[in-house]
Image 1 (cartoon, rainbow, N blue to C red):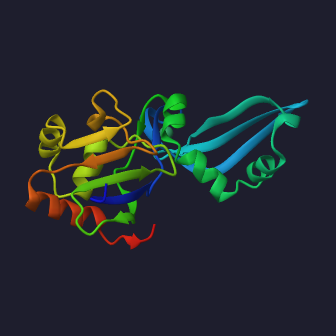
Image 2: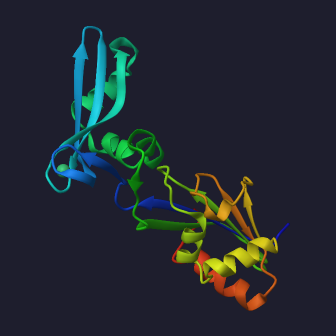
Image 3: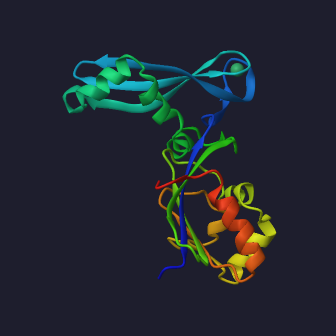
Length: 213
Ligand SMILES: [Zn+2]
């Protein structure tokens, strides 16, 4: 089929998610921010690793477990070096992993502020369908309808109508997918019947994309 405008959107949050924790220093629930420092603790042949967070109100600490009681020999030496030096790339991968953070902290807050890069994978001259593949370097809890409403000239209620009419389809299929957190590799297909709408949505979907991905 030669009627596709296929884009890849790479969405990277600008700031890491913050855990909301009961702080032993100042009492009430507070956001904590990453200190960027990893602490290692060797116990015989076993190792614990934490990323240190600090309460934004009183500087109280929270140790986010990266792993506990790991056999040292089983740890990749490059990873061990990265942890000992608190290397920024390594730390960022942990800081931005919202799903892993939620599993440890329970409650987290995520910024909707994302850095979006758009690339054209395929641009047929007389395209009718728009396909968008989402690429996410870090797992995020940002809702799909919020992302689409921010990037396309479509309100969340309009997105819902189009989705119900199957003019928008999302793969892999999940229940209530518009309200769920976005996932790496998600494919959104917009088969818009209204030509004027199709053109403005297509233009916004391309954005300032670079050709050739
Ligand atoms: Zn505190």
